[in-house]
Length: 370
Image (cartoon, helix red, strand yellow):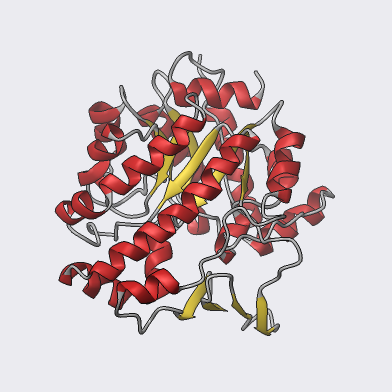
């Protein structure tokens, strides 16, 4: 069975695939190490938000390693590059298209100066020069990878930082939380401007031929939601409903995936109601995310993608422990289809190459349907 067919059957739950499909993302150091080991050149597509770069790059390498998916997304406009104020890889600092000043942290790029940190009015938000979602050259990398991988692999269009995360990165988290709590109209104007950018990028990816769009914003912590379910339903649910409808209007067969780290079980029924087909990353070890309970509650309406712990398991476990965890997740989420196995986030440099390979082998071994 071709990888594309495997993923489509699994996520649509319309027929049982030969095995549970596999997807994973790797940080730069692991990409470089595996590229050298396998002799596969690592090709990068720089995202408009730095960390998404590692979602939408190195598709040739990841498919060679066993991924059933290629992930594409919006890159930078033709002739544009991020302003780099410190090229030292250990302390790299860039200013992106949105005006965020970002510095390389221990694992991820971190926003250290938000362009709208001092914003206070709707007019200021309306006058802010947002990037053009359809800028010339933004989709060159996506178009090339879709043409290269479409026949054999499931193509995911990445649209993470869809609204909430992009907005709070532009204001700073504290200001965003205060603005939402106080009902500041300017923050809703900002959400709508970010939503319009995401709709533009997402619809173009759909037009180019992706099989799924990977939307998402992190609304969860290790213990619960960052905002109340009531606030989420009032402020965000109608906006995601509009976004999902716009994307599906461009292709009724499109699968809509939604990503949120943390414990977000209270809003999963709402997301299904407005059109979510696949929940990612099913972060393990947080309240409400027991895989068997999720499968029992939502498995007839929803597929799951993720569930493998990259915080503790992959960096520190033995091969046998990784295999046991993968087998347990497949047994919980895989019956009848509806599951794609993946780490709950980009695998970072604290995970050894041997453990990455152990994870891939475990899915290929324990994911087979008899």
